[in-house]
Image 1 (tube, one colour):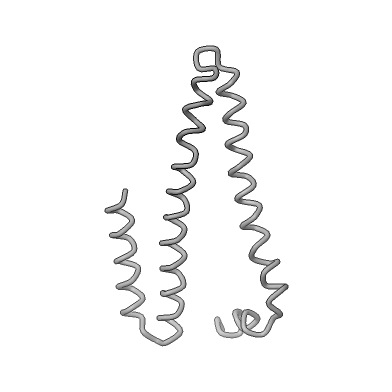
Image 2 (cartoon, rainbow, N blue to C red):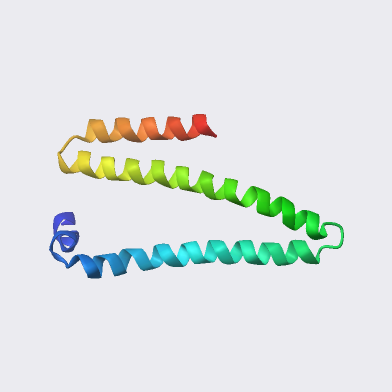
Length: 109
């Protein structure tokens, strides 16, 4: 049953698949950027923070983007490896890779 539901991933044109999966990703990144803009507005309007609050937020923002990039890199890499392992009918390898990824993320935190 699952095989017929996911068959379109191998048969559909790449352009339509990119639109189908890239647009939600782009929207989520735009929402994250909008969150930062609204955060800057609220910090600027706080009388006790003012420009120092904005400066602190702008110093920390690149660090949060880097942390997000590393987390997405590890998570997406693990997802791809799990998909490949399950496609090769190797569930033990998939389980081990999820365990390794989880330990890696917990040790990095």
